Image (cartoon, rainbow, N blue to C red):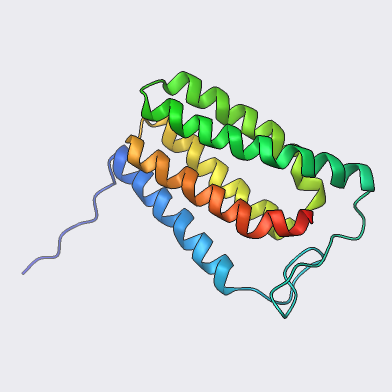
Length: 153
C-alpha cells in the first residue's frame, strides 16, 4: 500500500486553517493565565496594570475601545450583506482604534489580538464565507471584552 502524498491546501482551506489557528491561539491564551510581563493576568486571574502607561494614553485607550468593537461589528454586518469593500473599511477603522488601545495593554495581549486582526484581514481578502467572518469577529469581540477591557480598567 502506498501512502498519499501531501497536497497543498486550496486557498479557501488555508483560510479555514488560519481561522482554526486563531481559535487555538485563543484557547491557549485562556489556559495560559498567570506569570508574564506587566499588564498580564496575575495568579488570581485579575490583571495587573501596565506601569509605564500615562494617564492620557490610558484615557485614549478607554475611549477608543468601544469604537473598536463597533467597527468590528460593522465589518461583520457589511460583509454579511455582501459589501466586502465596506467591511474592509470598517476593519481598517478598527485597526486605527486598536493602535490607540495597544499602548495601555500588555505585549502578550497585543500580539494575540494582532494575530486575530491578521486572520480577519486575510479572510476578507480571500473572500471567505460570511459565516467564517462572523466567527472571527465574534471571537475577536469576545477576546477583547474578556481580556483587554479588564486591562483598561
